[in-house]
Length: 618
Image (cartoon, rainbow, N blue to C red):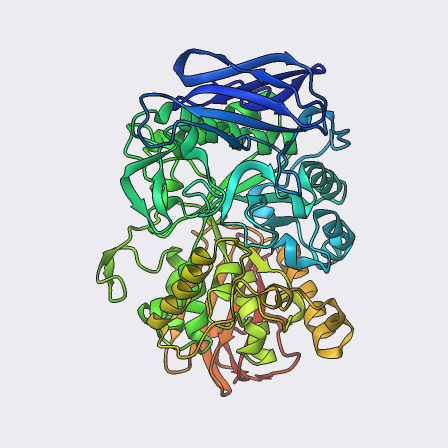
């Protein structure tokens, strides 16, 4: 299908001051543009393939408009009356819910012409939720913390979804207008300004997008055309139509969305939510088209754009190159590293954690990326996964916590509420010593104590009650009793905001300094910063509850001892005598002098400690 790489061609756009409107709505027999300022009503012109067009209309940026639509005679799914609807591809929703705001994507005065995104392997990602990262929950307020993130050593922020959702507060995965930037966050100009400012500070921007479903409230795409299909069901209802009748234009709709974020908002990378729930059995998967369109845009603009997916399939087809039969995504999140790390750290083996046995599986995650790559999964009750052979370390993103793994706990506890200060440091070290891209979740770096809970602000009482019931049922797999905090309550949302005052307290300030030192070591070390999975070995000492991780290049070897046990462990015949200690997570530990006849040190690693040694080969 033809896609215009240079400009958006769906929805209302401004081209050299003139407004052009394209709407795909094959289910409609009449479409009228209603302008609020003048109460003018302008009829759209029907075009081939279910499109409707207006060209050169008198509308200015900032004006509020609506669509008045009527279903076609042949469509039995709708009452045949005029309905008021918001523009499905609008860029900005009016705060009072009564219309869409016209916005000129091309008018923003960008200052980042010289910007070049870091290579993906140099990403150190800081995931944040706009509504809870700052006290006022707006995109503009994030800018006030950018110097703090630079000081920490962050090279990329990842913003949870900003697509317009119902109400004022939400994680973002209930978006119903994929092109609109949430109005309570500040709208599209606020996002453009934030990205421009990030680039000035040397920070790349990753945006989380959702192409597997739309939210349950305020979603009227089905009124316009075949955006959904009955062929498949997802956990959120009917699947978006990527391979059924009318799917060509649905695919184009979402391809336009991908290109818009890169081209018009200067986003550096997209994180595509739950791509395993994108149901597409076409000869060319939708993600292949996303990759091809993104590559063409990159050639046009001279900028690098990255595509990172969340997938629950342990299938490297998603990240393999297209010429090898893959979809060509640049990277993926791997939850299994997180699960193995948490069990090694003492997480009870309930729910999906039952599949993981701690240090043995953590060592496997270091070596193989996927823990389950063809073995039987007790939790899934089937053989699961395939080997990630040939995939570089920079294709995997790892973490000790993220929005899902915190927020999907019944009480939203962060690691700081579950583990000792020493264990928090060890878990962070496990992430930053890995041959993968590290991600930290907002507040982790200073041991934030407030929870990150699941929250919504729906209007429909039946839906609100269904969400409450669904949350309660979700935790039955973890054998948890009690009731989760009410997702609809404003208190649930407010209690999830970061408490920046903690940074002034000693233990939180020391944790922040620890993260700074750890990130600096990652950046400075040519071994730790090189994500070559071929130069790595990891072994689990099961009795000692310890992982020994070795990484190397031609000039240096790095040895990491990760003691997850609650006792000191004596490690012998592993660390060469010539190796020197370069990092100690607890600032202490006993390195015993070995007998002169041995070539190895005998190390006493205190409980819950990371020790890093370096041996030069030069």
